[in-house]
Image (cartoon, rainbow, N blue to C red; front, side, top):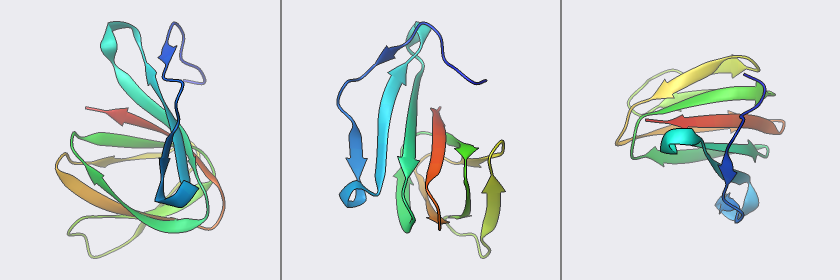
Length: 103
């Protein structure tokens, strides 16, 4: 999917890790929530409340789920799933554009 139609966008950006991750929340019909953002080159740890699917739109990164021994690589057009009530590390050397699908 290259665009979301008929959505509401929360005006205020979500800014994390001193500006290394910036996203906007979009709300689709029926109340489905997603975030669309960019992560600048860094290694960051995110905590999850609900399950998440990280869809990579542009760039590539390595990620490691909580408890995993190995890093995995994903690139544009790919995604990875993170369980709820968990965490993951993400590392990239170039700006990464992503969509986070919640639930």
